[in-house]
Image 1: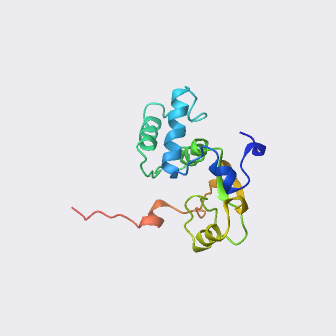
Image 2: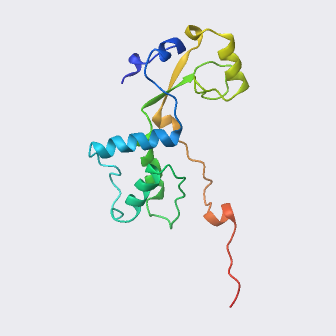
Image 3: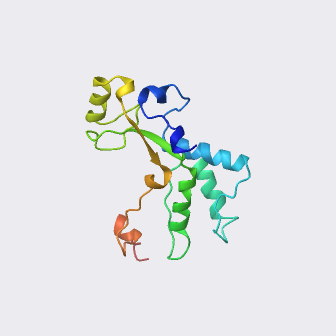
Length: 158
């Protein structure tokens, strides 16, 4: 799908088969398509074919939350970044400066988004398209360790 084929307002979007869905459902559906088409799932990840990768696939299919733990250099960041491929290529959002976040046009969560939809007919609700690459962001301070996030774990002396 190229950008010129995408709806530019809510009325046009409603005329398509696009449905709003949670991110975990989006990832699961796209992973299932990739598996069905025998697409390589994690190119460039070597050595985890019988351990980490099957577990990661199961977690994604089961819509689990995932926490990547391990020493430096074990492909945690590379694996996380590779999950972007399982997001839809584009998702629609209400594209208006009065709305502070990328709002789902069918299910806005902010007061501004709900108010905007209530006050405008569908053909006057502009739709923008958020690319999968722009939906992923990393938020980790340099030098942060897992222990810094959850605290040190100590065992009582025996």
